Length: 99
Image 1 (tube, rainbow, N blue to C red):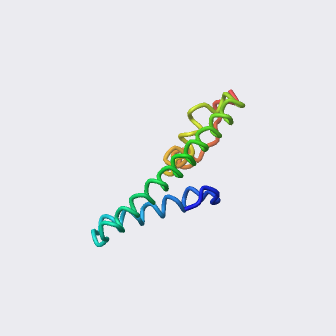
Image 2 (image 1 turned 180 degrees about the vertical axis):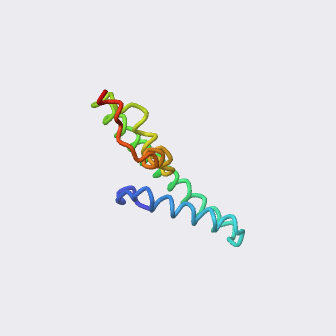
Image 3 (image 1 turned 45 degrees about the horizontal axis):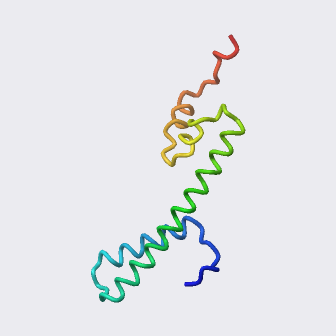
């Protein structure tokens, strides 16, 4: 694979990595195929790590611009939107601020 290749999107690289792991876990590959799959997996892992590092840096820049976001901004971006669901279940606007 060429170093000049266009970087993949994180989700695509992760899906490819998961497919590779599944192929390796099935045990149907020859030794040579397993080694090639492992090498590809290492590259995909590096791509994912790089994408996550870049995302973390972007979040740090954004939170540095507005200190009020802080660590809570990261909690709100989690796939388990439990905090947001709790607010929606209450169904009441924050009246305490008007007092």
